Image (cartoon, rainbow, N blue to C red; front, side, top):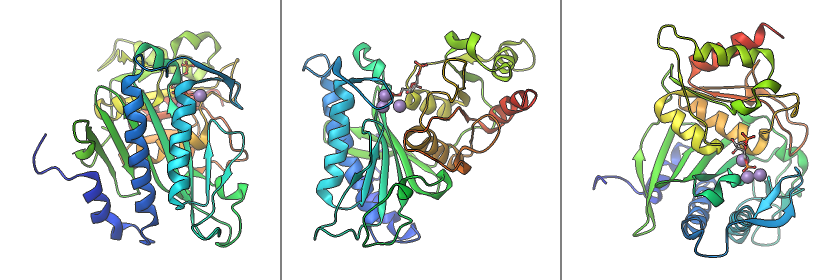
Length: 335
Ligand code: AHG
Ligand code: MN
Ligand code: MN
Ligand code: MN
């Protein structure tokens, strides 16, 4: 670690004025997420030793079996935000409905909503592979002083004021953007402090990695099948390398550092794809664009989709901009 590295705490204070509304609330939200991330990290690191691996015995609204760590991370992030009384609402992959949060005086004066995937890649917990947390922050659209409504959550991604993820990997990192580029902070577990380790993260325009669950190939749309064959063809800098962890956060993080494209398309089994627009695709799209990358549903920009429901799913093509553009070219042939 370089001695001169800033801590995340110092960085948040320094950047507060850069944020256009500059009331300090957004900084406090990032601070709350920083704290919750450390609590979840502590638990993830002990998984296998304490009773935190395995299924919780319930299903979430999306019909997925909840893992114990899904439930735990969900509670930690929600409680940390509620206790600080800094947001007016929270929506989570693990909750059927959004949660209304009141301000310090029992009021509805808080301005921001947080949407999150508290534990991404849950199927990887039991086998000691990296998992993550994804979050997205919007300013409410309904008047301050009135209770938060569904409308405050169903905003297109281009209205996000902040988004980020935590990756609980070989090291734990918090990566986020407030619309002024992307910065990554690595946790020093000995003292529980995040340090700025990856300033101004950038996607290279081209890359050599493609990440897609090829086991579903037979069910993919023809455009995706053709793009996969293109990736495998021997020509120029191809064939590309295939890398798929099955944790969006980990696959995205690797591709942002090394250059690559992540695809979770529609399939005959999942006609809208699998990933959730509000908790997964929009925040990752915001980070991708802020890092010079691109995020699409195969035909157009993810962040321009007007959501119609909380748990909406969309196909997702995200990564190095020329690779995503190439995949779109193949998709357009069958539109
Ligand atoms: P979550 O664990 O939050 O439900 O998300 C799982 C997602 C995502 O992390 C990953 O990229 C994808 O599911 C993997 O799905 P497949 O196993 O179908 O490839
Ligand atoms: Mn899930
Ligand atoms: Mn997820
Ligand atoms: Mn999840």
